[in-house]
Image (cartoon, rainbow, N blue to C red):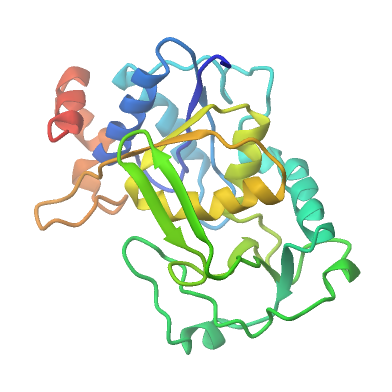
Length: 278
C-alpha cells in the first residue's frame, strides 16, 4: 500500500471559518502518520486575493496544523498554487478532447436559467439542458478559451463509491447531475478538472473535504476514469452549521478563525469549537 498522502486545499476568497477548521483538523489527524500537503486553490481571478492566501497560511499554523509540502515550503510536486499549474490542466483538457469526453458549449446564462432543472441540496450547478451536447467539433479547437467546455456524462449510469466517513454513496449521472463544466469560457479551468488533475499529480491517497462536495466526487470519479487516473479514497466531513441550520460560509465573519482569534480565544478553544459537534 502506498504511503498516506492527504491534503488541505483552501481557496483564498475570504477568511477561513469554523467549518474549514473542522475539515482541515480532521485532514491533519488522518495524515499524522503520512504526508500532508497544503494546496492554494486560487484559480478564480475575480474572487481570490493574495491577502487571503497569506491569512489562511497564518490561521492554519495558528490552529496547530502542520504540512510537509506547500506553497510556502515547496516539495517534489510543486508548484502548490493552482494559478501556477495551468499546464497540468491543459494537458488533461487535451486528453479529454481527444478522447471525445467533452464538447464546447456556447449557451448563455439566460439559456441555462430557462432550464427546468435547478440545483438542489448543496449543488450549485443546475442540470444542463443539453442544447450543445450533440456538437462534434471539439477537435477543431486548439485551446479551450472562448467557450465553456462540458463533460458529457453517461446518462443513467450509477456512480457509486464508499466514503470512509459516510459509507456507500451513490448518484445517477443525468439525473442527480448533468454535463458539467471543466473549463470556463473566460479561459479559467473549472474546479472539477483542476482538483482531479492536482490530486492525481500530487499522488493524494485520500481526499478529506466537506459533505457539500459529495456530488462533486461523483463527477470527479468520471474524470478519473476518462483520464485513466487511479482514484484516491474519500472522506467527507459533516458540515458546521449556524444557529438557523445553514452551513457556514465565508460571509459568517463572526465565526471566522481570524475573528475568533481576535476575540481572545486560544487555538485549543477554537479547535474544540470546531470539533465539538462531531
